[in-house]
Image (cartoon, rainbow, N blue to C red; front, side):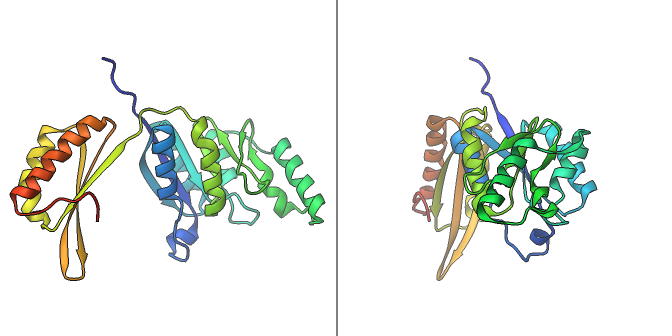
Length: 253
């Protein structure tokens, strides 16, 4: 039997506004779910970096050597702090150019809407030389791809449209499935038995997460694997463990 193909990705979230707390990221969860469920690609790592070229370049070079795919969000707008395109060009050692098709699309839109065609707006057509465009389905301004790096907008509506377009076009492996069991027992009650189950199912990712509700507390046990039959078998053992300790397992909170 051939070994299962595991395809991994990293997400680089670019922007001082995320690090300052002024804006809350709304892309990571959506992108991770879309990649896994539709493309069989596991988001294995995420990093938030500031609008500093050297830091973006360092993150890109580290991630693209480590993972099959790298996705970035943020920094491709018209303002001075939108430096993602320049940073990607530098990471790949390519010239930054005005992409002819992106330029054609934006100029046509600006003219149709009677908008001023200025240098700031035309910055959104800049890509590294040889880049392919990533469609967004919301507006004309595209993202772009260079080798295994996919550059997307930071605005959630646009970023989601871009990953929606990309996901069916990416080569992945088998999607990871999740099984969650919840009971009103503390982690300390479950820890020893859960460790034994993890030892028996080393290939399954088993996580323990406490929760607190009004007048109640408990633990969620989350199991993740691509083999649904194996996942159900391990989950049954977790359920038996919960019952043996006086808890009643339920599928979700």
